[in-house]
Every structure is written in C-alpha cells, then in structure tokens.
Image (cartoon, rainbow, N blue to C red):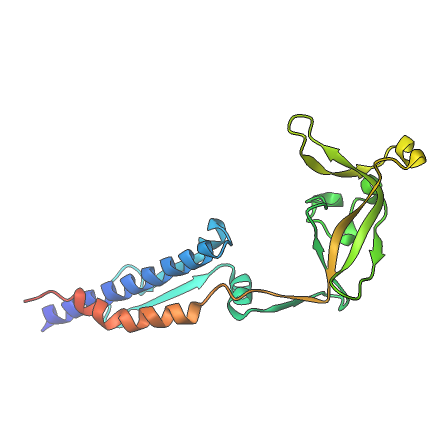
Length: 204
C-alpha cells in the first residue's frame, strides 16, 4: 500500500511539474511573439510545492515579476495622464533621455539644447508639443538624419534650413492592445493535467 501511495505521489508531482513548466513556457512564447521582448518574457516563472519532494497534494504556481505590465496587456488597460490632462508620447524626433538622464518627458525636456516646447492644439488627431527654429542633423558617414539641434545664429538670421520638429504627441488616453491571454492558456494546461498525471503513472 505504501509503495502504491509513493507511486501516486510521484505521478501527481511529475504531472503538476509538466503542466507548470508548460504554462510558464507558453506564456513566455506569448510575450515574445507579441513583440514585448525576451527580457519581459523571462519574467514568467513557475514553482512547484512542496519544494523538493513528491506529494499527492502537489501544486504549481505560475506568475510574473512584471504583473502590472502583463495585466495591462491582458486586460487591454486604458492609460491616462497622472494629472488628468494629456498623456505625452515621445516622437522619434525626441531625445531618449532628458535632463538628469531620466526617460524623456515634457518636464525634463532639454530646452537648452533644442529650444522651448510650444503647445499646438489640433481638433482632429493628437495635439502636439513642438520646438521651432531647429535644423536637422545628418550623419557624415551615411547621410541619414540623426535628429534635430538648435539652429545656428547665421541660419536664424537668414531663415535657411529652419524646421519645426514635433517632439511629443498629446492624447487624453491610450488603450493597450490585448496581447496576453493568461486565463485561456491556464485553462488549456489545467485540462491537460489528468492526462499528464496518468502519463507519469507506471504500467504494472
């Protein structure tokens, strides 16, 4: 009887482990294929309890260390500005980092390098934050445009090569696309569990 019980403990634990690992890897594939990157995909983890031993009551836990981000993409969350006005989305023209080396936003935009931001309201489409009287900067090797910089005094006087660059799009809110489907994947592996346990039960 004891031997049969140990056999059952082992089969249940192996089945739980296989289902847990299967769900974990399935979620990692979902995240990676959604374009969120391998680093974000690897935040999905799986643990088996009790640790390091077989048990007829074995259980698996699949979780992510980026739960808020994953919940947003699972639920299709709506992101709004903290101050209730506009959500500022940097355009490709904006520098990656602002004053102090932090991620760029209107409050830390380096106006000493580009000039002051100006608000442009648009009835249709997103409103804008722009800088005026800047000139494009090009790579000497490839000729590709690298970004914008303050115009020289000479160009400011002559008006040559001057541009207005859009640095931020302003929108009331953004709805995240529903890229992650955890509940559906979890149910799929839950339904597989009886078969996985039987697969690990030795034939006498």
